[in-house]
Structure formats: C-alpha cells, structure tokens
Length: 476
Ligand code: C2O
Ligand code: CU
Ligand code: CU
Image (cartoon, rainbow, N blue to C red; front, side):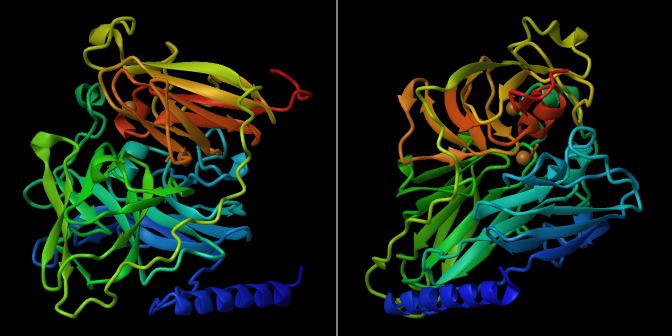
C-alpha cells in the first residue's frame, strides 16, 4: 500500500470521526498527533517534582523530562524509536503491554544485549493494539525506574470514543529526602520482603499536583498510568462516576467500578471517561484510599466558573473498538498453576530470611532475581498457538500485580467467581491468598518474562520466564 493511499484512508477516517463528533455536540474533535518515528535520549537530568519554589530533584530522564515524552503512534503502522544511552550504566527500554517480537521486548540478556553507555538501539515494531501503554527500563529496573525513567506510550484508535478532551496522567511515586533529593537505599531486602519501596511523594506528569482544571458539563477521557515502583492505588473521584472503558490498553465493557474505586497496581493502566457533573467553581478531591490509614488526596478537580457546556451528560457511546486479540479456546486450554510464594510472614519453604540471599520470593519454588538470568531454564514451555489458563495462586500475605510480557490475557475469575465486563490485561493484581485465572493464546514465540511489577518483588525473586515455541522446533 502506498503512502498516499494510507494518507487518504487516514484523512477520510478522521473526517468521518470529526463529523460524528460534531453531530454529538463535542467541541473539539481529537486530531491525531501521532508520529511513527521517535528518538529518545536517556541521561541524568533535573526535574521540578515539588514545584517551582522548591529545589529541583536530580533524576534520570528520557529526553530530560519526567515522565519521558508521551509517545503517540498509530495502530497497525510500523514504529521506530532510537534510544541513545547517555547514562553511565547499561539500560534497555521495555514497551510495556505492546505485543511485539521478542527481539524488541527490552529484557537484557534474554531478548537483547543491553544498550551500553554511549551506545544506541533502534526499537522497531508494529503495535497491533490501540490503547494506553507505557515504557520503562528493564535493566537495574529498581533504580532506573525509581529515579524517573518512565513514559506514556499511546497507540491511537482509528476511531476513538468522542470526548471533549483527553488527559494522560502518568502517576509516579518518589521517596524524597527533606532537601528534595531521592533517598538512597534501593534494594533493601527487608522492604523487598514486604510491600516494596513505597515513597512519600506522588506526582502526576512529573509534579506534585494541586488542581486539574475542568469545565462543567465536559466529557473527558483520562488515561491513568501507575508508573510507581511499588505503590498500589485505589482512586475515588469524589462526586463523580468514572466509567472504565479500557484496562491495560484493552477495551472492556464500559462499566462503573465497584464502590467507584479504581484499583491500580504498579504498571496497570485504566482508561476512564468522566462526565464533569460537578458545580461550576467547586472543587472535588481525587482520593487514593488503597491503604485506609495512609489515605491522601491526590489532586482536586477544579471547576471554572463557566456555566455547564451541556445540561445532560452526552449519550455518545463509550465502547472502544476491539483490538485484534486472539480468543483463547477455553475448552482446549491447558491449565498451568503458578504459586506465588515467600515474603515476610510466608518464608517457610523459602529457607528463612537468613538463608534467602537475594531472593525473598518464588514462583513454584524457583526464584529469578535481579534483571533476570539468561541461562536460567524457563518455568514452563508452552506450545506456540495453543491456549493456556494460568492459575495464579497467591500463597503470600502481600499483593502482587503479576505481569506477562508479549501478550494480553483475558481475566477469567477470582477465587472461582467469574470476572465481569470482558476484562483483558497484561498486569493483573492478585490480592493476598487470592487465586486468579487468566487465559491467553501463546501466539508469540520467545522467552517471555512473567513477574510481579512491585519492582522490589520482581528483583527479589518473583520473576520467571515462559518459553513459547513451535511444536516442530528443537528442544534444548
Ligand atoms: Cu513493565 Cu517486565 O515489565
Ligand atoms: Cu511488560
Ligand atoms: Cu509482588
């Protein structure tokens, strides 16, 4: 297909989308800002996390900003991203949630050689799915992510849901000293055996937020990204009824979450559509009460004084177009049980704190630690093209957002109860002692990481690889 032809298609699609939006009374049809080629420099930098009046924080940054630049690309079109490593140590970039070839997955030693200081790597892939994704290092992850290396990756829908405005909230959590600098002590084993390195400062798009200005009556899509090392969030929009339209980039049946709470573990994304039904000039808090005792107000929606731009919420449909995900054949699926073990209060069978060394956690009694080990045998070998049910059984006293690279899976059930609303994910939050069944088609060959995204848990053993290979290929 020639470039002209693509241009024509896109323009036509855009025209009809904006015509539709105009009919439904939306003021600003969203115009694509996508670009298929990007270049990102990784280097030390400074970021005004706590606002212009406090000292800037020394960070590690993509293109000098925290979070890194929001990359917007088009679904189904080739993307190329050059990454220049200006750090004094190796790095890689992992495109979290994108179903791409193994060689582009960014796991050092397993899917690529690390990018050495002063060197570059060109990532090339064609994102099959539209949605909210993100990127981060997979080398010395605890420190590199903890010092600021994370950014949003938006794959635009060909026909998005019509809204007045779209916001991306890349939420990060920092442990800052009183002088505003990042506290040392990454990789503390005691912490790793508990909830991980939870910070004391939460930023949205790189600053401690005060208000998010909104207008009465408008409909806003917010792409929420939890890019924290360890902090699990449960967001409540006081006085509002967010409708969840996508989870981890994958569209679901639009629904209002239970108790209006958006549970967002590290690495998870939720797209919501919010009708601003509040009163002009008023403010409404967005509260994170995941931990009732540590509950805090993340930000306030601040209404301007203008009269509502529409009297009743729009009736425009909220359902996003489905992505081309392969549907697992549940009747033929093979069941694999993965037992999550270890952590403080659960070290029996782990040899106790004294003998655990770098491992505080295990999956089926094996622990892959650090950034992964190239030589370590996979936890399981799956046959290319087959359907699998992974049963994630959490034997620990802690929460784990469990992530699988290279695939999205259907979330089937929790403790045997079916999960409603057609939810797919690449990172699923498993509560203490909970069992979650997910299903997927092993359609992407390679050695894929499966790990907890509480980064301390990952690097302390809650990590493994699944090998997917064709039935005919050689077994090693
Ligand atoms: Cu975002 Cu291996 O993870
Ligand atoms: Cu990932
Ligand atoms: Cu965990």
